[in-house]
Amino acid sequence: MSADDRAVLFDVDGTLVDTPGGMLGVLRAVLEESGREVDDGVVRRTIGRPLAASFAGLLGLPQDHRDVARAVDRARALFTETVIPTAADLVFPGIPDLLAELRAHGRPLAVVTSKVRPSAVELLRAAGLLDAFDALSCHGMADRGKPHADLALLAAGALGVPPERCVVVGDAVDDVRMASAAGMDACGVDFGVATRAELVAAGASTVVGSVAELRDVVSPRHLHASDR
Image 1 (cartoon, helix red, strand yellow):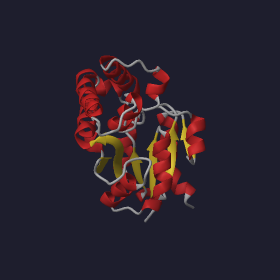
Image 2 (cartoon, helix red, strand yellow; image 1 turned 45 degrees about the vertical axis):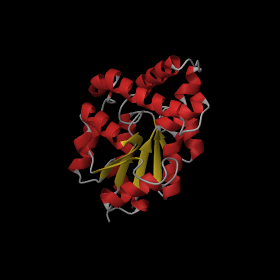
Image 3 (spheres, helix red, strand yellow; image 1 turned 135 degrees about the horizontal axis):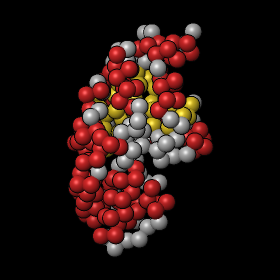
């Protein structure tokens, strides 16, 4: 397999689409409706995790508690009402062109996300990005979610690419840890949730601060040179 065949596995929230701000508002609204006051910093650190895990921690309840399930349903409804209508405007500048460039070079592309598949499809379609990907690996489609390797390996299998020929691009510590667990390279982006220092500490081989820098890392020309 040539360097230009290396697959790129993208996280969604905070990596392709600037949804963390909207998600923060959604989580805060649901917590307020539940009579809970939680510091915004604490809430923000849960963004990117499965909603059940986020609300279990924020509410101090087991994930299978009915109040957690109610909060998850309410959050998904609010996200659809308030964030989805603006999804196309939340795509990070340069992302559509980068995805088109990678596809033009025949690069296998997948999404690996902590969103359940219906929510991932809803957001990607509204953002105009759904057709850019060959596979979607979403929460609930494997036994374990991030930071375990399962979702990344599921995506690699769907693309027909061995793990060592994949690079994970994500904005969260769990994205980097998932990549490491799967035997994949990890490129962190620091324009989402985690800081550059957090991504490096988690094991990211590269951290970029813009989509332009990301193009330099994942473009076929860059990978070809690095593999010589």
